Image 1 (tube, helix red, strand yellow):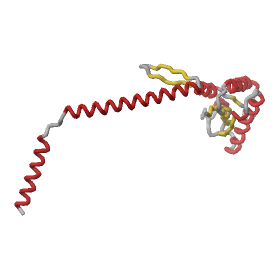
Image 2 (tube, one colour):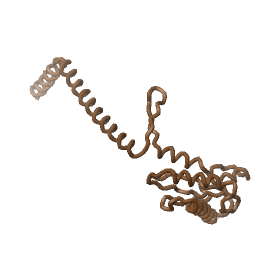
Image 3 (cartoon, one colour):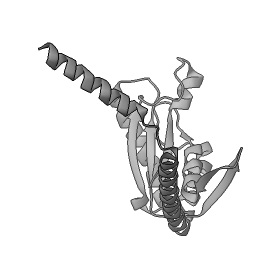
Image 4 (tube, rainbow, N blue to C red):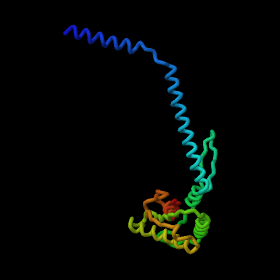
Length: 197
């Protein structure tokens, strides 16, 4: 038994000494690392070429602008993104418990109609009806739908293709102002417009 233990210990020691005595071949490690870097560079170039090809397609489908920010970081702003931002900036407000378009809000509806008609791309504009917190949730949901439909019908009369319009009501669930005051409630009685590709 002692003899077997002594032999096993000797073999283990011998394996450790021969395993550790070998110096790593730095030349082979450097070559392996360079090969990996070359492969990564080739993959990156292929990905870059693919991205460039996609950018070309995007440029053909929509006007694309590149803007440089800071240390050469580029962002791409498409015509659709500009359109979406213009839509989001238009807000039509309503009087308390009303869904008819106020006279002072008609220029916004006309601006919206011009904007939608000037963009020939294939898209949909979502008209989002919103309400203040007065009334029940069900009542405000219905009022939000009436407000969205009111603007939708006005846009159709101004020549907008009905297929480009969809409506939704958020009722009182999407306030832009949460203070419990008249000036705040006025801001929540509105229609917003969202670009849907």
